[in-house]
Image (cartoon, rainbow, N blue to C red; front, side, top):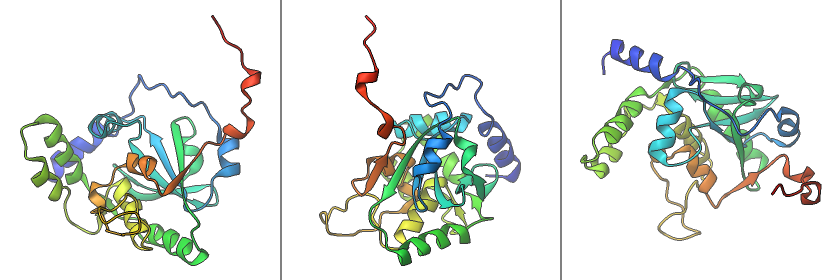
Length: 222
């Protein structure tokens, strides 16, 4: 893909959709009380790109970022590449917190240091174009396309592959292996999508408002 076409594609896809309505309004105070370093934040994004990812992955989640503490996230952004941003950036979006189980202090530090070391890296735009090829041509051999998905350049990542690589660095699985529950087989990180952290049996789903919920405070409207 030429640099000119790449810039045009990125500019178009990174624009926010005017029709986006989030089922989650605010909630920053609740989230900041419960989110922990190493947590994966899933986001239903507002960009045009987000709609395409949701369609292709058949899920609500189009983006993922890792919380590193200090009210900050690290993410791989389509336009800006790998960067650090404030958690509050996504508080007007629908989000979900996925938490790995019982990480040791050493592994947590390794995890955080890994994503921090990638700051300044580029987003893999070839991965984006490959996804669109799949969407526009259902007759493609998906197995061949998926094996070659993305640029294969280790300095270029997408949001979920950045996080998957970080967990792989500490031998923490994202999805079950064919070898069984105790077997660990590293899945190609470019094949990991944001929804895989939601579906994974190895991550807790944290709902910040659930502790305050009491069904007796609600009534049925006929």
